[in-house]
Image (cartoon, rainbow, N blue to C red):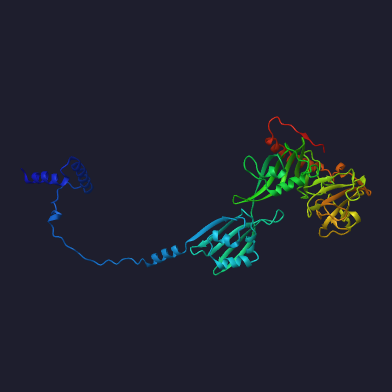
Length: 458
């Protein structure tokens, strides 16, 4: 056999491999290599690597300096921070709150107690949220909270921030999200029982309940008039921050069914004057000249009628209404007016007499004490506190004796029904109908299909 052919045959067999798959793969690679170089000749094979002498070379390799990277990692590890969030609990002190927030920083606690702005954190109500960031040693880096002082005061955010070894405090108005909520309730026992719980577990805010009482107090005495089966619907504002409820706002509309009669009210504010008030859904003003009761909650112990006088024992006309209430219960002005008399007056004891328009006056007797500023000529608005229930003068127990007088003669205040607000103009009525229509639609969604009620005459 030709040595070249012999070499080619055996050499390729060894070069390409002993299996068919290996030979196909190796042949393909060889073919590509040949095509790439454009050569078809066969070069002598190099000696096998196993036959060559092994040479060992030792060389020093310089490793990179990792000290900078290690130091950075250690710095990062030592600067770990933690964010905690807690809600105020009943009986919380600043110390207990800081402990739950993971703060172990006496300097921070001292600053919060003494700084005029920072100490607002200590005024937080139960359930309000507080956030704090600390380092791994418990040192305070920052603390944030939202404070609500009251319905008439702005909501504010308070932040305490570390600046080196010192702290700074900042107070800014909160940016709140406004929502509108609508709820329906049935009366089974009392108003507060109905507002404290419901089928869905929701609870109406206390400020909303107070507005319900104020809104319908000229028609309903919430102590004595409520009956099982009464019901009400209410639409009101709520304000939120970062998904957390902050406070309730104004009632936008309400309807209350008492003894089968439904009273309705909607808030309307003129956009030009920014003056607002509550109106019936047909646009009639609801603010009346006088409240039905000078006390928010009271029990009538003696009405405008003949009775046996509790002191003299004589049968005579009782020219007023007695409201039984605990000593110290606030007494409200039944209507706008000025103080005509404030002092002691025989059997009336401590008494305030208010002078209103059209020769009307109201008297409030047996007070334990007067409210601040009660002197002749002092102006008062409907609902202002003018004194407190007591038992001064001819009285056998704590109560308010209330008289309504026309030209100095006592009349039965239960028969009075005078509206005090001027009617809406044509332009205002047009805007009002849009607002009222929206509220009527909301209430319609709450009523069972086919339900009816009698609307109170306005």
